[in-house]
Length: 406
Ligand SMILES: [Zn+2]
Image (tube, rainbow, N blue to C red; front, side):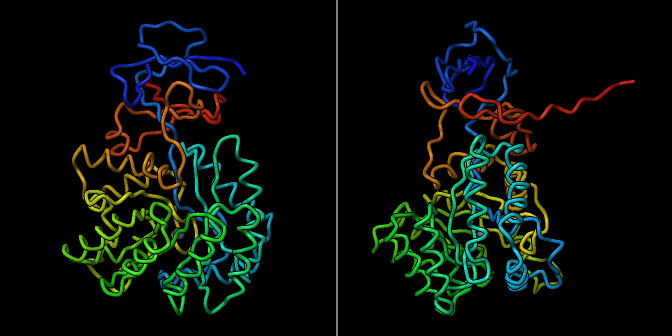
């Protein structure tokens, strides 16, 4: 592997621009920008960061719009359309669609990703097998974590429990459930925790996905998290009920989540598409304010969730674009809020997935260069990722668009 250096680099925690030496795939000396190195590349004062982190995506059911019909645009319809479609999923088919999304994600600067994979009597182990192959084949550019996931309930279909167990014996990194699709949400959570404890993996729940401020699953989840000593090992996605709560109820829930160290991932594209279908005007946004949760000590991230399926018939696996969408919907304007949003697709998400997130001497030369000088501007302007490296090897490049004056 050829050693090289990056000069004129904007790096978090360093005053002014720096030169970064890359030796044997690792970060070598970080010096002031006056240093001269061999084989230099000019980074023109742009930000070098350890890649975006996609903390919640479903590769197995991506890119299936041609197999589904969207009429109502509701959560119920999305679950049932995908339920029928996945009977026909083959391993190669899941692999091909998943690879399409992963390649977009790589080009958009993502270097760590957690994917959910539905494992139940309809999908069998086929999707899981495909995702395992994707994890291996794309390891040159991206680290993939796999969450074995019960989308369609558990207590009414205990076969799924056995499938999940099989996946956990075969390398799944997380186990996840969806209490709102179960006849017995609390028992559902218990069963997922049981699996988590048995296989010593963290757990995730798709939770509270509607705009009714009542009947939240948060209190029960927090109770179980504390009882089972699972602090810092539970994440939840959506939780749009929080967007429907008044200030007092919101703060109460935020404090509970912070106490149990439960991390929350907001999924703006899906939340916006599926929620509020009962309104014919002034449609509610239904996106939880992750910045406000952060103010109460809750660890939060943002993620894509779905790409081109009945849950989200859009998508390009571009986390910076997703963060911009979120900031716009939540009506943010201040610099510090933009910086918090940037953290939600970078260091906060890395913390949820329990992966290191820093560029320092001795750390792997795994990072991306983005076309921005400040975190704040990256979110406001959807800064393009220009190049990325993993262990010192270039993994993608997006040349800048050029204007030719006549
Ligand atoms: Zn999801």
